Length: 476
Ligand SMILES: Cc1cc2nc3c(=O)[nH]c(=O)nc-3n(C[C@H](O)[C@H](O)[C@H](O)COP(=O)(O)OP(=O)(O)OC[C@H]3O[C@@H](n4cnc5c(N)ncnc54)[C@H](O)[C@@H]3O)c2cc1C
Ligand code: SF4
Picture 1: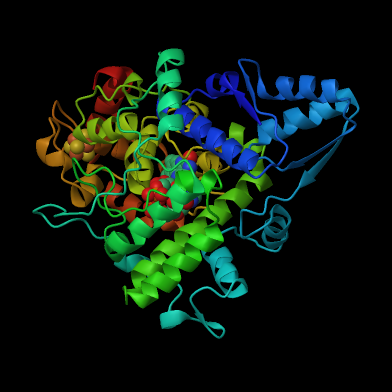
Picture 2: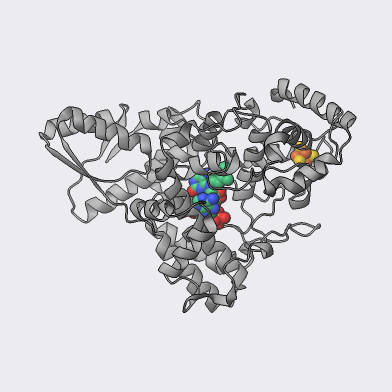
């Protein structure tokens, strides 16, 4: 095992992300050693693949056998190194997924349109998840419509907090090292709460099943100040680090959900994220790399606003979502998609800059899952390869799904003028700017019909105000 500080700097990282990776690695190493398996654990400041090269040379190795990495760059670098060193490189399939790369590619090959829904149904049937014979349990594949509620106007009420795992001695030491060595990296470590062992990950799942699965579906999309975790499971980092497998997670959610007689819409909603989206996203990454990393459908070239790294903006929604991101390295899906990603698209930020930020800032960030979510879902950078329209919304959506707007200096309904909500202004500006393109997309029909109700004079004001916002984006 190679613990490379260089890697933590090449891929710029939140302090909690570095601490999580290193602590999980050291715990895993201890576990391996306790089972008397042979292991060398190398701590280095050098690059990962260079360290591997030196190690293989000292061993006089002629063959390298490894599980395929979840990062295209790492795979390429290892292959190039092996070629240069005349080492035979054999990749072993990653068994921590339901669907292999080959199986996904074969499925995709037969499809005119690559859409989650068809893939998801195929996976449910194949793995017999929530099925009654050939039919979906409850007679429907998808309960999405029931899973989009905001919290009550009075607030989310008492949500059982996630299980916070107290850092043990190993984790405390890692935290101290990260504090000392990675001082200029973003993020905080005071609330490091993440499972770093398989045992902790299983406890975290159990806590979710007993306390929060019940309302997961209903409030999956809801946002509220001082509510960073909502009813979510906080399990992505443990899954991506392979502390647990998606199969065992799905099996537990289904059996415990049915046992507790939890609404099927919630159980299905959760299952879809894991057996559907997570697997689909991974398949798309390997299918579309390396092009996915360069995709830029709207030819956006602007820089990421500086406050993505500090939270210092007047926009209340951004203060909250960036703030909790810096504190925990966590934001839930809708915060990432409809607040942080949505704004980056409307503000015409270059997709690669957005992807770099998302890869740095979340504890669960690894490229196979981060990049397709950013480039494919949030930014439409690949021109709708697996989504039928851009995920864009104005301040009205954020107002409906959260309490952010109540305390904001801006007014969510205002399209231009001093108090105009930047989301709302840039949303209409985006529709105006891309109207020729969007008029051809039937899924954009409603949005375009609404745009057509805005007078020409008002549209001119919107564009003028947007130009001013875009040129002062760091100050809004
Ligand atoms: C722009 C953007 C960037 C993202 N970057 C990452 C990332 O780097 N790493 C990451 O693991 N997830 C990423 N996601 C997906 C999703 O937001 C996180 O998996 C989720 O918020 C993690 O929190 P949770 O465990 O509480 O999830 P829950 O809401 O409790 O969902 C359960 C599980 O479903 C899976 N899941 C849900 N949605 C997705 C999705 N779209 N893609 C893949 N898996 C999904 C996750 O494994 C998650 O743990 C991103 C989403 C967007 C829109
Ligand atoms: S008014 Fe606009 S900027 Fe302010 S919180 Fe609402 S959506 Fe965000």
